[in-house]
Image (cartoon, rainbow, N blue to C red; front, side, top):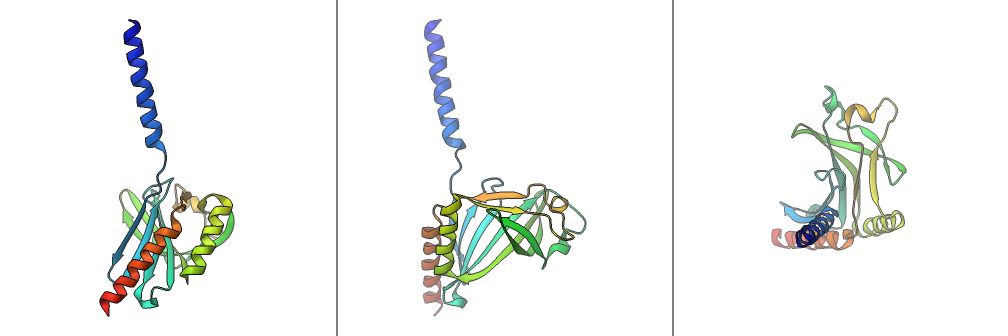
Length: 186
């Protein structure tokens, strides 16, 4: 009986260690290209399907980065498409800013809403984001209420965060890929 308890205990400890290891969130970056565009994308930690994207185009000679993100929502208000082209209030690490809704598309049992943060010079923006991330040790976006806008009407989960420890090498790799695309198109 004692051997059986030791055997079961050892397997239980091993099982729990494996589960604890698997539960840690990994920083998953995808670096790829589409036509004349290279991109680096990382998945969200709260809703894995939400992405934070850094697009680099050959049209800007690979010197600018277009930053956007997506949020999935299960909410299905009849007027969700009216959000397109609207500036929605958000907080990034508690700092009030706005993001422009660039698209709303059906996805799974709800909608995927795409937001734009803008286009920036790549080197300066990456330096800024790295410093910003290092200061807070997180990159969290929260969709908040604003004038004539109630976040809970459109989003069942209003907060997501992304790990950006590999931000600089990932965007640098996408930038190198962009320069290759530009070279191949010439």
